[in-house]
Structure formats: C-alpha cells, structure tokens
View 1 (cartoon, chains in turn red, orange):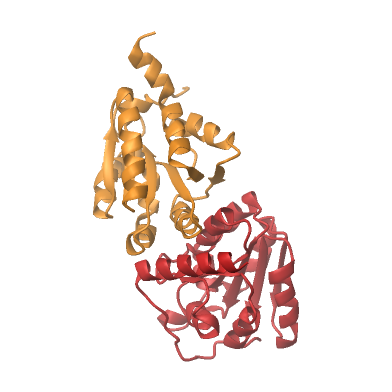
View 2 (cartoon, each protein chain N blue to C red; view 1 turned 180 degrees about the horizontal axis):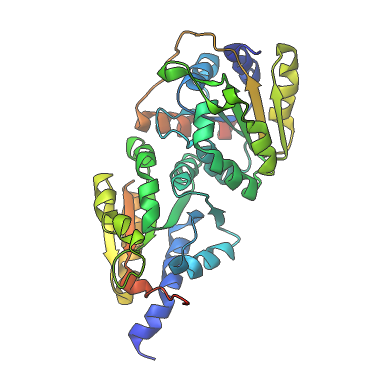
Length: 192
Length: 177
C-alpha cells in the first residue's frame, strides 16, 4: 500500500514541463502539497470530467506531457472517457488514479474498486498503451519512468492507504485557476 | 433549384466553414442523424481533431481542456444530450470559458418517438438556466448569419453559447416500418 502524498510528491518532483489536471477531492490536496506553483489545474467540481479535461489539453498541446491525477470515485464517474481516450490514442497523456477504494470526501463509503472492480482492466480494455498497478513504495521509480518516458495513453493505478491527511487547499476560484494555469503554461513554454 | 432548397442542403457546410473561419481545432460529438454531414466534414479535416464521445458530458471536459491549452473547440449533440451535461456545465461557468454547442432538436416538429419529447421540450430552458446564450435556427437561410455571430460571442466574449438547430430545419426522421 502506498502513502498517497509521498507517492504524488515522488512523481511530481523535478517534473520538467509536465502539465497536471487534478480531479476533485484528495488528489487535489496531494498535488497542491507537492507543487502548487506549477502548471496545475484543479477541478473543484464537475466530477467525472478530469480525464476528458486532460484529453482536451493533450490534443491542444501535443508538445507537452499531460498527467491527470484523480481518485477512484472520480474515475468511476467518467469511465466512458477511458474509451474516448482509447479511440484518440494521445501519446502525451497519462491518467494517474490514486485509489483508496473509498469516497474520502463524503465519509469513507466503499467505492466499486473496494469490491474488486479493476480500473486497470478497464484501461487495458480501452486500448491504453500501458496500464498497471503500483502498491509498494519501492516501485515508485518505475511509475516515474512510465509517466515521463513511455508513450501514452498511460494508466497508472496506485493502491493508496485510507490514512487521513491534512487538506492542502489550493485556489478555488475558477477564473483565477484558469489564469494561473495558462500563465504558467505560457511562461514554461518560453523557457523551453 | 431554389435558394431555400440549396441552402437546406448546405447548412452543415456553412457551419463547417465557420469552424474553419473561427479557428476551431477540436470538435467533440455524440452522433446524431441530423449531424452526420457536419461530423463527416470535421472528420475529413486534418486540422480538426474529431473526438467521438461516449456521453455528451465528456465534451464539456474536452472543451475546458482545449481552452486551457489555447485551442478553440465546439460540441455537437442531440437535444437529449443536453440533459446529460447539466452538472458539467458548472465547469465552463465557474471558469468563464467559451463553450460553443450545436444542438440538433428532437421531440418537437413532427416527432414520432414520444420518449424524445420529455427532454426536447425543456432543452432550451435547461440551457438558459445553465447560463447559456441560446440562438435558435428555424430556417436554412439564417444559418450563415447566426453561426458566425454565435462563434464570435462565444470566443471573443468567453460565453457559453448554444445554437439550436430545429427539427424543422433538419427535417423529419424517416422510419422504416
């Protein structure tokens, strides 16, 4: 079982020009804790849309790698988007699901993955180039290698513990979030 | 051929030429018979990424992602699909992003299937409640006027805009029975 915040931190340290879309809830706090000043876009609602926001961004910016960080509940609500991504085969898109098998924001009710529903099997069935689960901290370098070096679409499934962590809350205003993201994207494009 | 007949044939081509003019680079859609010609035109254009969706709500995420990456996009859906999008509309509203949707109507003029009437009769009201500017097109000769105006206000003023293509414009669905 992985420590979610540590896993995300290890994936996002020295992230280069990676662009990040974040599904609502705990993944947002994990990503904000790891690197809030980077080009991240946090969804505070529109549950189920994170992967599709990632697809739109990946199609618009084929020159950049895009990672979507989200939870099992958010991913389950947008399962169809895995099929949509599978059709388009964006080589620069990775979906990272932090799966604690529960709905953390609403009182830790078990999610479908708690009953053995396999998101990795769904992703493989949706023609992702590579999809695999990670459950040990020692495997984190392998997940990093996958995220930054392999051709997508990629599906990185992390078994994370249900341990409750401090909520690191980033900006919530959508207009400011868009402005922050686009300004940081522009600035990082100039540098590279 | 009268002007009306000719422009009736051409309305998908007129919308497509406006996609080119507006610089739209991504088009998401759930197929609908009334949209088939427009979908084909988008698919055959290498400058446009055509994205077939499993459900219309995926399109709202697509539009937001495209905008974050600096690209313009549009969505094509049947009126029933508007209902699928309602919570997702909060994304474009909260983030003040442009969102341009073309909605082909069912459940109104000469509808055969009563199941289409429930959503069709509230499509316009739902869109307005969700903050969309709604432009309805009844006649083919209005397409060339309304569509560029809808593109401009959506992208220049960052507005959610829906262009409703009435069932009368599209023509009645033919049933083989």
